[in-house]
Length: 562
Image (cartoon, rainbow, N blue to C red; front, top):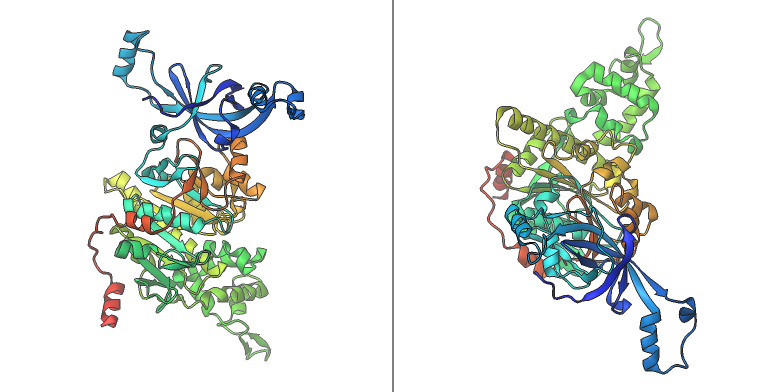
């Protein structure tokens, strides 16, 4: 189909690595960095982005001297001949449109019968003087497929859809400096996933932003939470019995049993708990002696408890003391008491109990399997320790459930598990180089989609995330980043990162985002959708969720409400 867009220039040089040099035939201010452009050359159509614009002159003297003494009409003519603008076009895709049927009808017929090969990565270059134009709506639709509009092209406002089914097949990330609208963009993506049911979503809502209605402090406007948009299709959980989230009652509450903790969970908190090198030795001794109940048994010991030895009359550690156990386990008693003091910070959390009222993992799994999505609000527990502790333990155990389901699917022919997407904020705290290899999140990111579980990482400091993890993220949706290290991190493992670096640095601080990575066929800057009344109306067009068997927690809540 012929485009209605006029030609903006023609190819004058370049190559696959450095991109094409294109001479503009329109005023420079009609084209911007990041514009989606198309070049037609023979049977090939090339798609790419404008990555730079440069001023040129046939002779430097014409650029250095203003021709003020020449009549305006003559000066205008001279300027178009002697001064010009070139742009760099970074071509990423090409489409075989087949031979000219007028010149070779038999070859065209064979091409048409076999079917065109579709869009593929660029492997050649167009000819000199091949015309270049701005992409139109049909070009955008040719390249970007999907049923969820994430935004619109910046210059002409063509809708850019996102394939949510492809998005959840690998872990993905949403990035941007503080104040660039990451939370709104995350709401938009999560809402799209929930409406389409592309995957079951579990959101670790560290700052209690996603579940219930909130106030946009920038414009003093109330914005709707995902629970408001989707009703009981979104289930809200809170930590600890009787907990609330910004004054709202959750659908169910979670408690962590002391027997759920592994020594590995504690080691991932080494920085928050200020653990020493000897802590790992002590933890190993606890696991050997007490097994799975090591945490409960260790916290039941009394630090500093002493008694009198009846034979010598000297004061010695009491049998129920930390020091007594340490000496029996051949562990330094001072190191054991120090570890006990540090672990007391966890044991004293109101949501950490010896015997929880229910199984927190089973409660979440029941919701996710029955077509619901779960948002875990942390309520008043907003410290890094709370976030790292709860999110890692729950994710580790959920992954174990999905691994079991996947093995049953592959080995016994059981139904495949529902794809699970786990959204985490402040991802650099969970995926930094020091602990990424120890957390469940690092494991999931490296597994791609082996067990039907992927991550959606949300962060303002991508440079704090382990490079190996960043390279495994398929789709990246990033707003403006002002730090060079953060820009480098977002572009890790991507082709054309040198061409995209400047584009990313010059995005507007709000609403403009760059889509790139495995989940989109080519990088493109877009103006993201607004999280407003029009978006709410679009999300309300949904089917009713399936009925769900009430859990014991649900029945108790209904009883108490009466």
